[in-house]
Every structure is written in structure tokens, then in C-alpha cells.
Length: 153
Image (cartoon, rainbow, N blue to C red; front, side):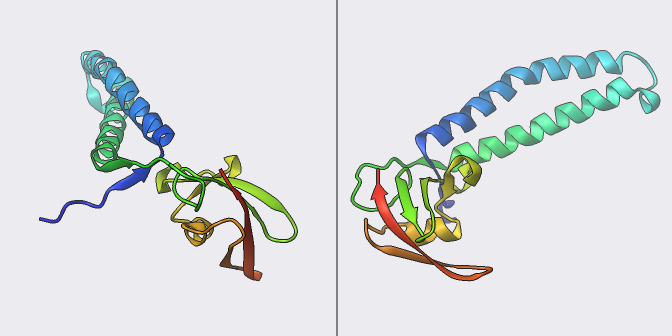
């Protein structure tokens, strides 16, 4: 069987994922206890506390499975140079009208409002492996947009 494709993360993104996993793992015994207490209250068909506790435990277990899967496949990638754009790079680009700075991150860390741009997004993918002064072109609803790389940090 082929080895699963790794899921790329920055060190910060991996640590955040691990922190969430550990936090849920620590809360799980409490949720089990709450379910047990609610089950002792009697008729489960009309027991809102039981239904809520059961749903909370199910959603926690589901999230733990998902996070475990992500952590098992995770590969931390750190930018080690400033010559070209890679995961972990901070890159400043200009489209001739405005200049924006992004940090290139793994697909699961993307948050453009905070300046975190996935390497899998159209712009992130177009920027990968480019150097200062090179252009990245993407298709936007208004047509093709060119971005020139101003700096890489």
C-alpha cells in the first residue's frame, strides 16, 4: 500500500493542531463523566442533558479522530532561505495598485484575513519557488492579475 501523502504545516501550524488535540484529549474524560451522570437521570428518550452530553462526546471523538489523522500525516516544513518563495516564507507582492505581505503556510493553516496564504491557493501556488522581481499571474473574476514579488523574508 502506498504511503499516504504528507500534510504540510509550518511549525506554528503544527503546534496549534497538537495543542487542540491535547486539549480535547484532556477534556474527554470530563465529557464521559457528564454522559454517565446524565444517563443515571432516568428515561433517556426525554433526557435533554443525556442527549447533549452524548452529542458533545460524539463531536469530541470525531474531532479527535480527524486531528489524529492530520497529526499522523503531518510534515513540518520550515523556510530555511530567502532566495525563493517556499512554505514558511513571508513574501511581499505588488499588483501595481497595492502592496500586500503574506506568509505562505500549509493548506490547513490558511487565513488570508490574517495574512496567512496557503501554498495550495491560486496565488500561493503561483508564488511558490519564485524569486524577488519575478511575476506570478493568476486568473481572477476581473481577468488575469499579475503580482510582482517585492521581497522574501
